[in-house]
Image (cartoon, rainbow, N blue to C red):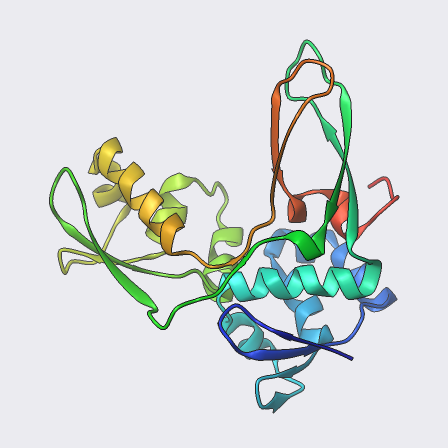
Length: 225
């Protein structure tokens, strides 16, 4: 068993993934519903804080930064620290495959503070937006949307705007200046583990950006999916 401290400060004990978890991670129905990762985490969580053998609801209650941190550490103990990426250049005139190695132990971890809700005054309208962090429940709701977009990703975190419940209409009418400022504030207060990868194409110099968990080799090294 392996013990870690989550970005929120809670102690977590994990076991390695087995063939059972591999089958979950390749189940297309579970992937589409967002349940694959939830069930894998549930299976491999041996202890969460003082709770031994935590149930699915406790896994879902975790903040997203804690959940991603747990997934990265689970990958480490199951498959090793290094992830070998094959990244295609987004430049249509190039499309070169670039090989990048990432050591998971080097990823930056930002701890959560004590606050769980935040108030931000929009620079344009001067309205005050209260918002919170993402957790497993909100992630599942986003995954269930037929066409998730920037508005839905913002809306799911907003508690109220000037004391009123947010809506798609209120977000659609918000100026781009205010929307951008709000996204930057949400990003500023976020915590967890930074899985972003940025490099340049060896062939043409075009920037390539991705996230580790979005790449097949993160969980299936050497396998063509």
